[in-house]
Length: 143
Ligand code: RB5
Image (tube, rainbow, N blue to C red; front, side, top):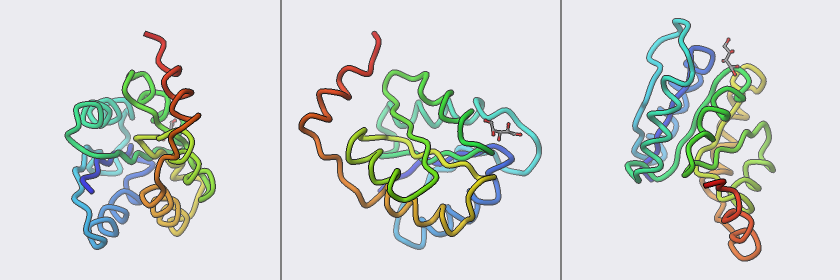
């Protein structure tokens, strides 16, 4: 898969290690930053990632900040984005099965890196169920 990824300073170290793991598993990864642990504003990387997912430049996105909430809020301002915040594996499966989430968001300051790997694997390997969930997704957009 071609994946887009971004983090703020709080998620930078996890992003660096996750990119390596994804590439080792055969994924192509586009890194939207940030590129250091220097303090920065998460919307500055969330919006470019969201644009890339909406345009189809990448298949799916992954984003991390301290709590995950700032990233999720910025990403979900985009009409074509369904970003889901995940802190465990079952939620990661469900944001794909039920919500067809096109961006996975994780709280870097609240889960160990091992959990980041497990959540990402669950997210990428779970298909959307469609059916009644498609009707619900079709009603999310407010325009
Ligand atoms: C950065 O200190 C922190 O506010 C940010 O990573 C994130 O948690 C915001 O939602």
